[in-house]
Image 1 (cartoon, rainbow, N blue to C red):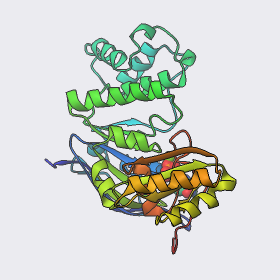
Image 2 (image 1 turned 180 degrees about the horizontal axis):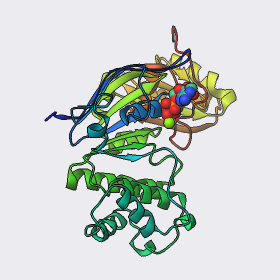
Image 3 (image 1 turned 180 degrees about the vertical axis):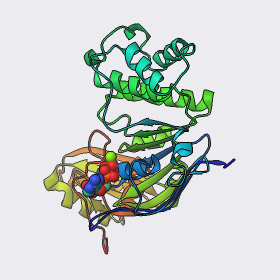
Length: 331
Ligand SMILES: Nc1ncnc2c1ncn2[C@@H]1O[C@H](COP(=O)(O)OP(=O)(O)O)[C@@H](O)[C@H]1O
Ligand SMILES: [Mg+2]
């Protein structure tokens, strides 16, 4: 038995001249909640689809519980539950009927089906919506039904492609709890993709950051924070037209600022508190209206920024995909 639920080795996928996945190697241990984090177009779905055997790699190898996806796809696929990026619940059927059809498809014995359906409804927090048509459900409820459905045939590994994208925080939290629950109680290994830094940080034991098809960082959230070698980050949010003035004040305080879409950030260095004081004085002396001044421990955003020179977060905490910035001597 392999100690890994999923192993990918030198995985490459080319679409014509575009290399969507560029030599990615990863080992996901049994029992882990692993998050593949990256902006739109980074290559997350392409990677997931190759792990599922839905897409043929250009080169490289995928093993699921030790079974080779290309040579032994049935053995490999048997172990996996899937939640794809698009929702696929049947709107004309009730929650219960959706689960029943899926259970039959996966050859769950009829004698066990009622118990499994109860279990799935409980997981999805949809017990009181058992007889309601899935077409009437909110996006979050559909997503929960889908996730619970993928868990009904008791897979050892579950792959979820952006399970919470577009959901409000309440539904996102419900999905997180559902995933934590099955991970802990049934030791299901979870591999999910996400654009949400916060999700990777809070839910995942380990994170792989993917950008332009390349795995650019791998580790626990704490390891990733340590990796950038910065103990604190100072940031000031202000109006766009004032950002250069703010950056000037950073430089005067002996900091190395980076100007982003609506804020200026810099590593705090040794006496960050003193620097903040200098910055506050400079802002008030220059009559620069400031929306926020803060000092914080490095977050996964800061890791991404440091590694790629690109800003990752808009107000919703999602990869913005906009305003990619060049660092000095950048990419
Ligand atoms: N079937 C395809 N044909 C051509 N290009 C594709 C195809 N699927 C994905 N791509 C491209 O590959 C890159 C990675 O896509 P994808 O894996 O869907 O990214 P993500 O899931 O991280 O948003 C993107 O540039 C996308 O346009
Ligand atoms: Mg995708």
